[in-house]
Image (spheres, rainbow, N blue to C red):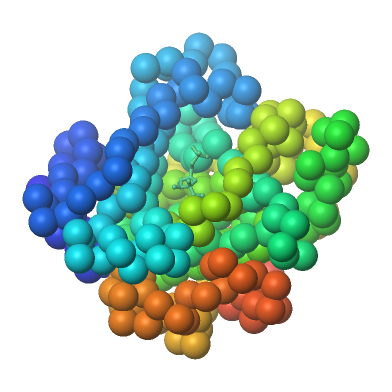
Length: 277
Ligand SMILES: O=P(O)(O)OC[C@H]1O[C@](O)(CO)[C@@H](O)[C@@H]1O
């Protein structure tokens, strides 16, 4: 069993089947699995799909009992996703991809915090101001950023961006999310276009990106990595769970996104090429 030290929590990974074990000191609210069968309609090539093969697991609402009250007060949840290693017909394993819904109290949708505990993540971030258009054919993607996040680093998924997590490393990708519970999730537009605006492949160890031609128009790809922002509780090397516990007020942006959009966007560092390692 490998201790998932970057989480700062007593969590352990079975290195053979990539199932996570939680110490009995922690409570958790449930577990969900997405095998390839449940990813149908989202993958680049679905020929001879290995239906039973696991793509990812999500462990929801992890906490120490003494922290449950604080999480409940802020309406936050801390979950862990494990994306399995490997590819399906060359495409790196990934989550379904979704947008967060609008909320009448805010101009911007909710963001969320993703902390890479083990492995290397590529987050596909795509902004659409009309993702909820009545006719999904009208949906327009205005910005597309492929953001690489290394082990021990954290990204704030910016408000208004649909997001999909891709495992580009060799082993499993383990990441946590700290998110605002009342945030609604919209899968429809991503499903309509058979995935996000691009697909990520690994061929002979090289990462390759292919645009999804079901989208009528895809903006120029941008490539990014991330930087920390202690004012928003994001300090690399300091587990998000711990950072939140020490300074819950720093994470106010999760429930009140409107005043933080520019600051969150400024945490992305742009590059000319995709960062793969
Ligand atoms: O399968 P779903 O619902 O898209 O969830 C995938 C991801 O979304 C989250 O719920 C948060 O955005 C994560 O917990 C998980 O990685």
